[in-house]
Image (cartoon, each protein chain N blue to C red):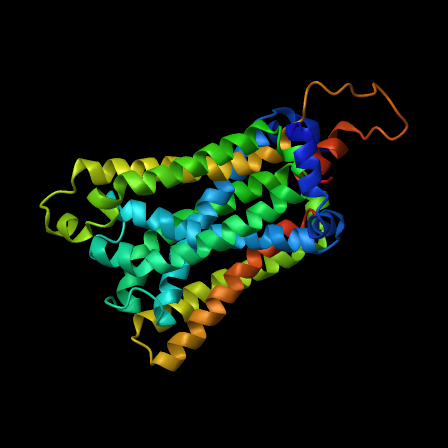
Length: 147
Length: 191
């Protein structure tokens, strides 16, 4: 039988490994969510008014994706430090739920609407929903430690 | 009056005591702090990457800096306000925490950065857009901004992991948590 020894995981054995992984996690989600928020601010008509939402999606897309990849890898590493605790943590379950929803929303409705030069009303609606979904994710992240 | 006494008096202020002892207010403030980091911290990263020519090359620097300025200012105010509430509500622990002090120094340097590079870079974006190549001073501004902000985020995280060495800990009590338990509490910022 395979036994996973938590204490052998470098994240638990090395003093610096866990906080360092968290730093990668934070910086990369600032990058991914920040780039999405930039498009959202445009959809809401609040910033970047000289560019179309479509142009901004194209310009920031690679950085959003890069950020998401690093955030997921570092997140999986953090998860591996204590899988059972996270799995049964209601904060974690909520966070993953909102995260999946936000990613799916981003790569379906959000980007499609942004690329299609939407009417101001549609743009505002999609921008607001996107911002709200992404803001809820870090709230879930913090909640993991407090439930 | 020592720093310890002043710190204790600060954290004893009514609403700061309330935040410290609250069940939900503290994590709500912490979450808001983090949410502003993702949105507005992300805008700062994008501005720096644009100046370095790594992102949004089609968009003039003038638009990136000018159109996002107001939002970065709003985010900065929310971020700092929430951060101050978190720190002052536990001033007893924070005042001697080297990572907290380092974070304050970095924030001070952010102020210096803004003053130093305002005329040549952030208030001079039209010239940057006209220049055939991005001037070195702008790249220096962008790289130092990246270093400072990522440094601030890392210090913020490390604050939770610092334990004063001088305090004698009881070798063993009935309540001594197992190593993994202790690590979990520490990560959670349990007080």
